[in-house]
Image (cartoon, rainbow over all chains, first blue to last red; front, side, top):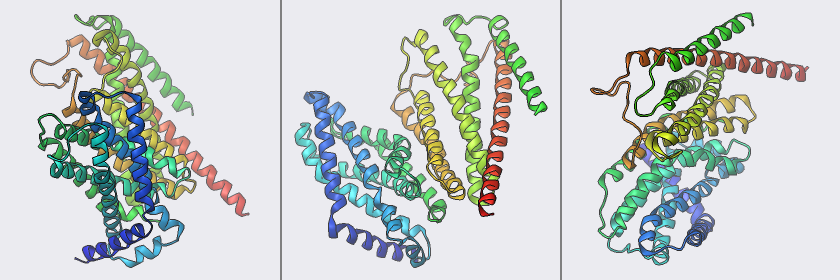
Length: 224
Length: 225
């Protein structure tokens, strides 16, 4: 219970910090927009091709954006020398991770939902009919990105060349998330939309595995 | 020093002998022909690489819980040696695949897993070069190593569901699988020889890391004085 209470307070802090400036959200939205538009120049998609390649391109753009967006998550605490204070303020250090990864999931999901209509227009796909299912896939996928992403942002904050290190550590590890969420999204955007329970289950499994790992090893990630 | 030279010489002779057996004692495979000979090296190296990454995972866990520098030395040695073996797998694989499947590369479950595994451990070694302080370097790379190893089964199953082209396991694949007896002898010998090579490289690299650590310590002592 103390864990949840601490998490709620810290999550409030993360969300407040971001919504005061909205720096992270605006830059990420623009970044994804640029990537999605640039992708469409590399090939001239017909309707069928859009349905085939669109979901993959979209998730790739999300993954690249996330690997940049997760950067300041721990770096900010380090630059302001607030990490020790943060650790002293909670009973269980897992609360810090839980709050940060929830905030990151919210930010990612928000940018994705904002960009979905733009993507639908640019790539000629129908998203309205399957919107709830699509949000479920986006949520599980974003959680899968945010859990290892938050952990690795604590690692890369300690390294030189951290701006390059985080994508390098994170992107190969996210191969399963990329495959599962691309397949699930592609099935939903198909001519006959279908919610692929196997891939949704796989994404949920991925989230559980890494959440457990973070719960077990999180406290070591905060050592200075 | 003398001991390791003797060990290396013995191992070299053993590998040369098993290579001879693979070419002249084991029969030529019926459908693939002479190219199948690469199987002996390919599979044995893949096995050694997976063992090395398993050792790396064990060392990483051990470091996080005990904080002994020895566990860190073992971790980095195993990752480097594993990467060497996996490079051999990634080079011999396409050489074998091209005449048999007609393509150099395909995004099949085991190929992709091997490739992603290689990338993950390259990242592990890169991360180590980017953190100066030895204790921090050991701890954070160990934590990354643990996460990376947990990812391995997930990568495998995700790509397996996605698509697969690799042959079904030949050696322990249930009924209908199995090797011709002379092939089995050659394979087991090559497997033994390359496991020996793994142990030899691992111990040599471990000793090097231990020496490096003591040099670093001496240098720091000299600076303090």
